[in-house]
Image 1 (cartoon, rainbow over the protein chains, first blue to last red):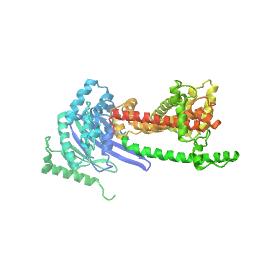
Image 2: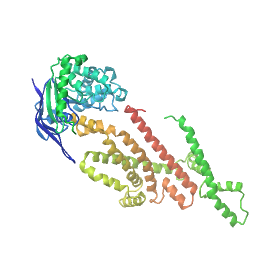
Image 3: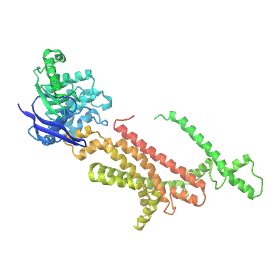
Image 4: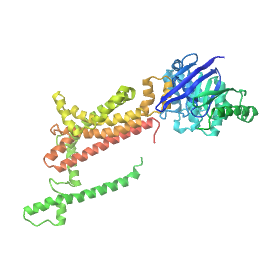
Length: 259
Length: 295
């Protein structure tokens, strides 16, 4: 299997006025092609920072990280990944299809190519009839689906998602989780997914990375034994609960309640 | 916008203002009438007589609204009827002189303001160095600097429209710089990060994200800029020797005690300012509609 993301003794320290903040400390991790990797941990554990380091939005201060065998910067220049933020971050003055067109315009796809890609990704996220709508005419969940469509529109094999469903309610979130899994199945992408919901992490992932704060480090990596086919009620099975328990133990071990 | 809901309040306020105005006319012009009577050694006028006299003075301290209206008509509509709208006695001619300087100054000021804002947002050195000077420029009273601009440019052989326009520019570029710096910086961190993940160039990020984001800020600034451009053009007419323009009319009026002329030029100027601001507002609404944010 090809390694998509490979980090070894990765360290990232922010210099602030209150002294250095160790966001990541000695992180070693490989993400293989086709993996669905979740990063879970309390706030301040560096899970978002790790994702941003992959995306070349933060520069590591030590260790190495490679994306598709290149540096993150080279990978970014080659448009190796799509990034989805917690907020949909759609441009309010563009319709949904025009929003999806933004990266395509920047990357110089032809108008005809743009159109076929937009239609394809709108269908993937089940928004076919909403292309002409403006973002404010859509619900929060639909906006987030549109932002996922935007990240899928160009041919990046790696999808980085930073708490994409964090601001949505439970029912919408369940629905989107189900959709995301089938999307992952049909597109064969590699997904790195930051969350702080244990059920979400266990339900979605092939690999769960449990992180702990101060300094941010990996405290456990759990390979999921769940089958690829996952109906929502898989969350009631003993196997699921067992993995969830292990995640919870990992979180508890890494977290000091004395603070 | 619902115009019907606004008509009655607006008319009410105008009625009140006109009523106060008429009352003030009597009160402020009465001393002159008493004085006249005393000098002519006749009896002091009765109150009813006083009212009609105070409203018909040739050079009143405060002209009555209908006197100003008559003067306005005489110098605009009546001139058109005579087929001489651009005669030197026509207020339309003087308004056009002022308006042309206003518009030219506004255009240069807007262009300069946007250019400086783009530089400030994209260049660290400019960010640190330009903004303090922009603010300092506005601490100098325009009345002090206007004559110097006119004189210096005259010495360089530039006279006429451009020096006046440059005084408008001096005033109008400021709100544009301040508004556009804020507007171009208004996209949030996630939107800028997204542009970064697409490896967008600076100019791509500018045209696709920063420029459209700044539109509401731009138009708010433009409304202020166009109104003070007019002020700048009027101030710019004062040191040129009051040849032409609304400012010249006001100055000439004050030389010769022609208060009615001053007031009609004043009302014309404020009407012009109102129309200019309305045009900018209209443009704002149209741009918002094109950007899918019609309200």
